[in-house]
Amino acid sequence: MYKVNDQTFQKLIDECLMELPKDHVKAIKNVAIIFEDEPSGIQRQKLNLRPYETLFGLYEGTPISVRQGNQKLIPDKITLFKLPIESVSTDFKSLKQQIKHTLWHEIAHYFGLNHDDIRKLDKR
Image (cartoon, rainbow, N blue to C red; front, side):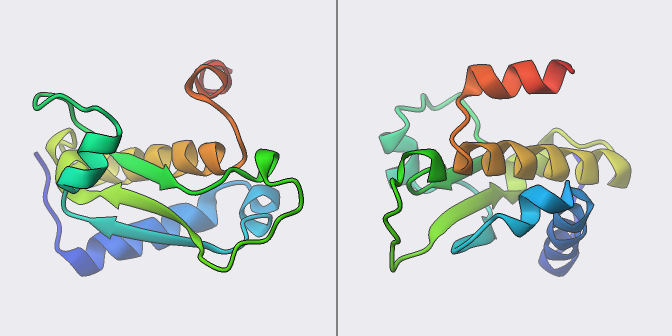
């Protein structure tokens, strides 16, 4: 487990976002990207997570692929979960790598990709 303070974690999220493909990042509109220590009980319940299951990130909103031009007043939300991400990280480099991977995964959900689509892209 590799731990950092909240300010460092936020800085890593910001850095990782800037390292992702620019055309995809520029296309993100009306999405709050935040972090929390862990998923809430409500989030775990909505996802039917068992007590032993962990979650690194969560996209909450309507993917742009199904919006049909509708604009929402409330922003979509991508949440990264700090404690689970830290728990699988062994050093600073692996922490940053996990943050970047999780952020990219949740952004892919924003664009409408499901887990199978994301796995296929990850294998490339």
